[in-house]
Length: 145
Image (cartoon, rainbow, N blue to C red; front, side, top):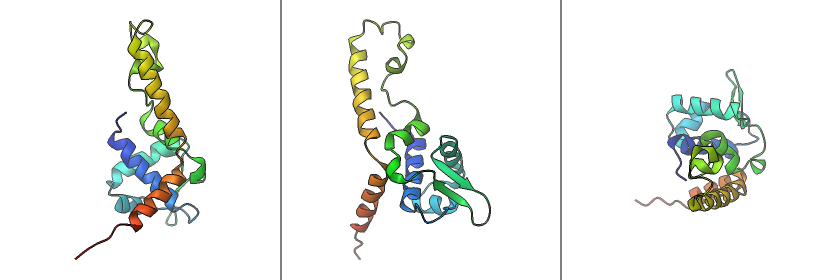
């Protein structure tokens, strides 16, 4: 599995919203600045996440974006499914008709196992856990002069 920039930036945006969950809506400019995401692209990703049922957006001067559910109720797999689609390494895993050799291909079984294991890890990893790890990692960063 290889993440696209869409998946990477989208996950970073979700993690930023998770860190600020319960503190009210977060404006796009704040997310973009903190995560180093170009704001126009972030706006597109937030629209995708809103349509996918992950993010809620509020208009107006006090508006912004927030997670629809608590971070502990969102999995990494759910977010990636909205942003990237299938995590299967080959198209034949999700659609046997995509390959003429699918019925007799020994590799397809391996790709199916890889897909199932990958989904298992992603689905068992909560956004809350990742946000906690991020806070920990940032607190260990030391600057030397």
